[in-house]
Length: 576
Image 1 (cartoon, rainbow, N blue to C red):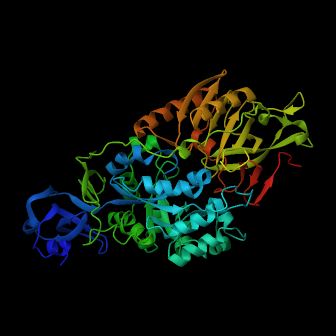
Image 2 (cartoon, rainbow, N blue to C red):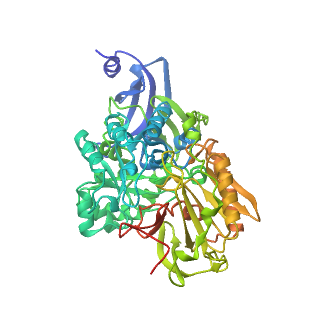
Image 3 (tube, rainbow, N blue to C red):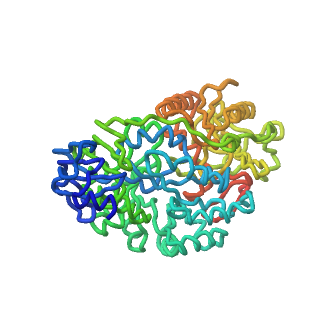
């Protein structure tokens, strides 16, 4: 007889009992009055009366009049954007979140497979269960070669055997439909070990979506009810989002009336520092789903059992005997008001407040050595010979993640093309910062950000290992980049030759080491400074950092030129 069986049979005592609550049984889709008995971090039994297994050393949580659920699992998030998990886990736990399905493409692009294995190691002891997907970005050479160690791709494929790796990370559909990439070997390996592939299907539909579905197992980019239905119809597990990037919950609510809800999960797709501090985490995602009209039973399943089963976490997402004791006690269902959280059998939140403190990250030197690039003031210069007529190709920022191609009148001064902040025409320079790269750079033009006078630079880019600098003069752009390099990565805004705001992100040039509350305050100051120097878009930080992502079609930046996403080619400044 095992120790767990002894507790289940009433012949030994539990070390934790949650008693008197209405327990959510996601397998049955109902609440029942039960007590939960836990031993060594695992649920031993659900019983009508746990008094027989409650001893003098048993910790008892009285949940009378409350609701007891499995801990929430974020089905899709990013842990290499803005903030270290060590400095944010306490806030995530306060939101009832005990598990994450995490992406880390930015770290892999600058540090390769070693970066991913380091994240696996450093997050293993956090009070929140973090599972990773293997980033596929080093396998994509659609717009330019991917430099790196020759062994990186093989090591990334081998990571699919790791017990905390649950699949392949998000694949933009333009890299998967009608094009051959080295990622085929990665997808084949995932299929061989029975782990899913995550998709990024923004703008993918009809026959392209069918082709995508032959490879992809889940997707989080549906923004209408019909798009959710189209994905589920093609066998794609569909993940709804409510977070800093988007709110697509209405689409999930609409589709939930027409498709099996077991094929739907919920996620944040990333809750940035300010929103994590001011709003919450998966508690607000689930609350938003309920407010949108999703039946609470279905909403709770979408944040517990559904993602756990889809990603092969057979001992999570449930309170059935043998499950890891990730337990959530709510005061009220509709408002998803968190009172108590148990993570792996340890009480980590009580009365809505975390009992764990932010931790100081501990990473190898390689994580702090990714921001340095050579100082080349001439990289901001664009010769008049770059275009053959009186117009220059530029990226026009529209809103959110959207850009499009535009042609702008050339502004020529002393044989070179310049910016014109009065009309909103700005220069943008992307400098590669991969340790195994060659430091290549490309300077183009961007509009739609406002009459920026000065510059902003960042190392925190989506799906590109580089520094992006946007500004009105070469001097301001160089000063902003210098400050980012000095900090080991981050953000810097410059006006009148001086740095007016910055945010240090020294971990791989992508994440802050300080507690999330301090990071949120620093970003608030930065955003205010950007508005003061002329950026008049609704979300200036999102606008800058996404100018490199191929995930949403139209024109983006690479160090080799503009990336024409739909046509899968690199184009120059000359539109003729």
